[in-house]
Image (tube, rainbow, N blue to C red; front, side, top):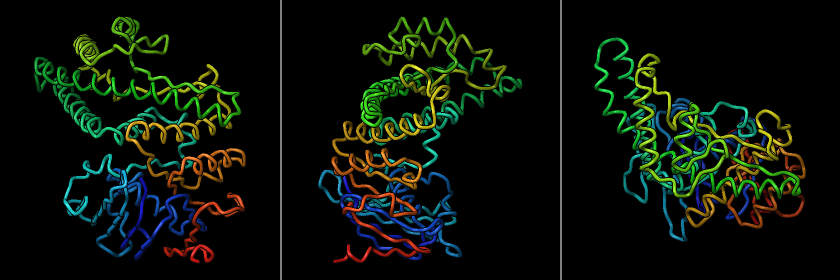
Length: 393
């Protein structure tokens, strides 16, 4: 997978941009607030149909009411195009895939990308929602079916929570809850099983990367944690093949057994959930836990170990998507070179060159990169992009 052409009009601080990246490493240099990150943001937006941090209206150039992103790319050596037009009125957003109109969810899995920014270095100490978002984003790009199931599950959680509040206030009967709990159990089982299978694969890949980066001195393990499970719940899970205490699951674990567990547990917690006004068990509350040499990273890890683990995790994400889809996604590295020491930068760049992954990197200094030819260099100044002169020859 690689991008052949990028076009913007009135996107962020770019009045217009037409860019032909190299099918290798592309480095965007410039001072802060010049527009480097906006290039990566447009690619990421085209992958998942939303920005990491901004509303549609905030992506439009000042005093303009409409912006356009168009990306031509190759997937499995077949040419495709994505065009997105959005305005200050969100209802006017228009998305075209190969010339045909689609909804934003239709973008998922078409132009796969992995974004790595300085915030990711602190993933391990952030809230569980950050780690769930990481995992869900990774699985969704590999499986649009999972993305649809997750959206359905989240709607069911919202609807069940609204009903719980109404029951608590005497505006609805507890008998109305059973139908929602039944549907929630079915989709909770789908989501949990897919996450467990993905974490199992990610755990293997991330540990390989961690050992390479740490010169074989560190083992990284990733555990899926079912939040809110009590001792009796853990015994039920163990009986169907998910042993939380031993941090492993039986490959024979299936959706039916998980759905039965969620159904029975939600039924048992019905009245406590009504009192609380929210659903106390389900994948919307679960978490990922990370361990270095058997010690939990969030609690015992050093700053260097967290940086190494974050890098290993992102590189394993590339490998995971390749194993699921057959090719590497686009890698977006936003100002992370300054956060990594020289050894980690070298490990990262060597991996990218060896695996021939198309990469877009932003940085403030060229000194972060080796002197020998690495890829294509662009200089970004106040929404204008110039290719390094010796690259034009």
